[in-house]
Every structure is written in structure tokens, then in C-alpha cells.
Image (cartoon, rainbow, N blue to C red):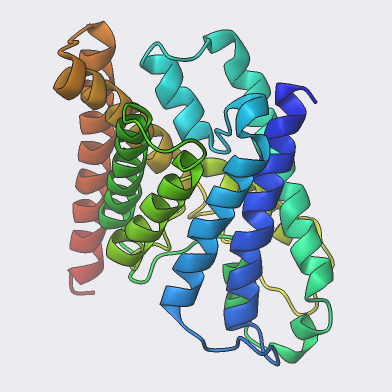
Length: 271
């Protein structure tokens, strides 16, 4: 198997477990209905671990464009392979979402709320706020990539690394995921969101494309920042990538903050 197909299959496995647990907890008429946030975070954590176990020896099991870009910026992955990896991750995420649509086929009609159906496939904010939502995705992915690089530097019993990464995903979900649903992975959100848009899901609503850029831009920025911060803090490397990434993240968050303040101000002005 090639690295391309490794990323396709690994990301597919991740989404089958992740979107699958979201469907089981939120769709009507399942045995897992209303079983809660801890169940969802466990499903995503174990989904990452299982995807990594499946293809780690084939592609390195990135399964996430934010990690792929972060590793490339850190100098640990070839930029020439980045487009291929991201394409594979997007394809795998779409396929995984399509499989979950089929798996829960009779439950879409029983579930009346379109937002609940969208939530099986993609993330959304608990409280819409451009700056806060973007910051949540930046911080969550910063911790993810920083944590993965730190885990990789440690010596574990052979074969335990994917499980430890799964626990990292679980911890991020429990501690940071309650604000935006912790996409922390552009493919995890965008691939299934596209699937939601094109699949014949009974009674579905819009795919909330106005929000869709946040779980793409936020994780890419946070992953890049996590990678250069790891090199700085753990290896003492301060290069041009560190300053460029840091400046771009500050500009991104600063622009989001300014826009949020301007929007809030215009909403509060009396008519």
C-alpha cells in the first residue's frame, strides 16, 4: 500500500469512529442516544488511535492537514508530499462520512432537527463568536501538534504511541472541545461537511458554509504554531519559520478580534 492510500484509509477509519459516535449519541432511535459528551470524546480519541494503528507504518498516519503542514514547517516532512497527503485525507474523510450516512440510514428520518444532522458531519460553535471560535481551534490544534511532537520524542513500549495520541485527543476534547466541537483537523470538518452537502440526507438543512473556514484556518494556524513552538522550546531552534508563523497567527487572530468587535458594536447600536 502507498502512503496516499494509507492516508485515505486511516482518515476514513478516523471519521467512521468519530462521525459514528456523533451519530450514535445525537440521532434519534439509537441505543446510544443522549449518552453524552464523554462518549463522543472517547469515540474520537479511539478513532484517531485506530486510524494510526492501521496505517502508521505506511504513511506515518498524519490523518490531519494541520499536522502535515506543521511537520513540514518544522522540517520533519517533505513539502513536496504535502498536497498529496492533504488530498488523501480529504478523500478519506468524505468516504468515512458517506459510510456513516449509510450506517445510520433509518435514523435520519426519525431525527427532525437539521442542526443535529449537520453536527454528525461537521463542527459548530456552542456560542457563535468569530474571535473566540477561531481562538478555540487555534489553541486546540496548537496543543495537538505540540503534544504529538512531544510524544514522538519519548520512548514508549513498542506500539503504544498511537494509543497515547488517542488519549491526547480525548484530553483535548474533554478540556477544550466544549466551545466549538474541537475540529482541530481541517479534513475532519471539511470532508464530512462536503458529504453533508451532497448526500441525500432526509430533512437536512444548510451546511453552514459561513462558519466552515474557521475549522480550516484555525487548525492550520494552530498546527503551524505548535510545530515552530516545539522546535523553539524543546530544541532551541529560532528560525525564519518561527517568526513568520507567529506573525501570521497574530495577524489572523488580531483581524478576527477587530472584526468581532466591529460587528458587536454595529449590532448594539440603537436603530
